Structures are given as structure tokens and as C-alpha cells.
Length: 150
Image (cartoon, rainbow, N blue to C red; front, top):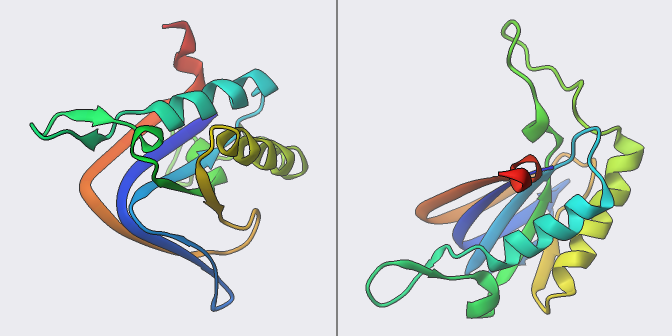
């Protein structure tokens, strides 16, 4: 499982020209699932995301999480995060979790985030989305569930 967490001033998602979700200050979270990911990855990654300290204290040090600041998360399904670019010029998505399985994982991940009392707005799984983000920083962090052993 892979996440890209971006600190944002605001963000919104449109599908077919209609706004489906938006947040003010908080975190945009792109989410990709790989073959071999399990339910434990969902729990671990939700915990890591809501506690990721990407918001500054008075000294400018990254010291607060979205949970600490009571901010929102814009959760965006993104299977292309799991692309492999090892061979050739065209990305391979062989390592991405199959659509039917990944959709359920995404729904469970959103619920896991919400269990922390976080306001979570979400994109539409499998839809072409127009995503508007006003980045704050930029602060962009990549989180991988495979890192848990290190």
C-alpha cells in the first residue's frame, strides 16, 4: 500500500463537472493498493496518516498532525501510485491490486481514517477525477506499508 500525503490549504474533487468533495486546510491523501496488501496494512497506514506530523509549530518545525490540528483529509484513490517503471517507457500496473478488491480496500481505509474522528472527504473510486489542490509548502510525503519492517 502506498500513500502520498500533501499538505494543502484547500482541495476539491470534481467528477463529470460536479463537485463531489472538498476540504479547507488539511491533507490530501493519494492512496494506492498493491497485490499482496492485507487488512493489517489498512490499519497501519490509517494510523500513520492521521498521526503524520506535517504541520508546523511556532518555530516552523513539523510538529503537528492532521489529528492534532483537527483538520480534514481529502482521500483520493489512485492506482497509478503502484506503477512500475523498471522496464521501458510505459508504466506497468501489474503490481496494482485488482479493481474489484481495491475498491473494498479503499472503502475500508476511509472508514479506518474516520475512526480517528477525522473529517474525511473522498474521491470516487474508478472515476476520472478533476482534482484541484492548493498546496501548502509544498510538503509532500510518501508512505509505504512495506516500510513497516524497517
